[in-house]
Image (spheres, rainbow, N blue to C red):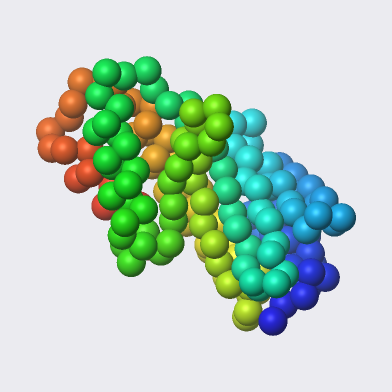
Length: 153
């Protein structure tokens, strides 16, 4: 099992490896902030007891729509298929912002594995941002759930 110090060392290497704008550690609470760019921040929290890291980020504000049930259904469909999403979950925070999170075991964690996981997390974040932000746009050919294939792991 990786210790907090080992995870901290991996996180410090992640910034230059992924060319992140910044990696900020909050050592007293075992969390990190990954500043990807002006629009994207990923928070990483270590649960030492469970030996997992949780990545989380804001997707987008809940769109004003008369058809939010369709969006909620899509989010629930994603959450209901962890085998297709690699465990990615979507939800709403207290301010009606759609959030994305992913838990991963720290056992055997290394910088290249974490970089690959973060890159996949960011790719899916981009996809979900497009879906949520454009939700009120005219429907494209096919149901929105058909556009989420690239969100698979």
